[in-house]
Length: 97
Image (cartoon, rainbow, N blue to C red; front, side, top):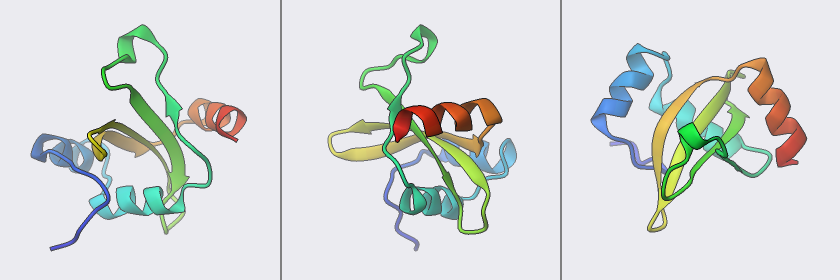
């Protein structure tokens, strides 16, 4: 069985596959291929405890993904992952560098 650098619920696995067509391998590749740090969601609608974080990175095949997660007790829990829109890419390049 493949080991990943994150935890993910079966509900989220299903959502990634069915709604976003994103594989767990692509999520892992994005973690390893990330060039910059993470950003924290500041908008009230996205605030969580612990804070929701995100980053944008390419999969090994060049797919640009936005990965959304929470860190708790030293573990990474995936909340979502999908194709990054242009606005998110611009914000990430500008703020995360």
